[in-house]
Length: 296
Image (cartoon, rainbow, N blue to C red; front, side, top):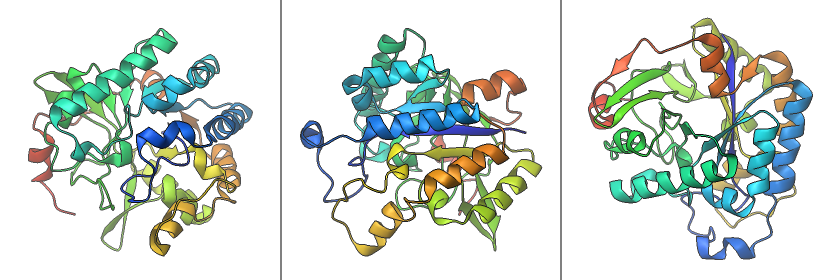
């Protein structure tokens, strides 16, 4: 079983659910660091000979279309991270649909190819968004990786499905690739992305990766370009949030480099193509109905 490598392409100031974070009307006036950081990741992937899925924020793609084209030219999959980095549960169904359609249109205009994949900002599909999967299928997507099957500050969806599964909606089928978790002392724990990847020691991440792979599940790794940038500006925030946002920035790149050497990683697109995998589990209910099956 192979691992899946993904990048959420956004900038240092795209911090969610933070009162002091700049609004979208301020973004263009801020110094951007996404170009240098994203290209460092692309160089790292090239050196390891791996392909990744790059979930581009539509706002980033519109401002830096050359980054989208470069990712595509280097053999990576281009996918959508929404348009304006809004939490799903703070949007109405119609607002979400418009956002998802707009970001997909921007990326397809740049690449000339159909965009199949989506990841919601902050994994913010929850029990409060039972319409999420149907709207996503209506927007033209074929797969999603927004479900975080454990508790978190924003987002998190109670689900019994930890492996990829298919969802039937009134607008069509979607394949869901939930973020990888494993159970420790009765609690579901993520280890393969974001602050978890930065916080946990490499030995622990290796051990948990091997455990999940041994269970026949792919491990979904995810990283943001800012997470390899210890020199990025810091936003004002409380001590707890500051720790979770900026811990171990100096060590993340070396840790990622070693994980790329230790495990075989591919994009979502290539994982499906190479494995021929179609999930055995079929879900026909909404996110709300699904959440009734298990509590975290």
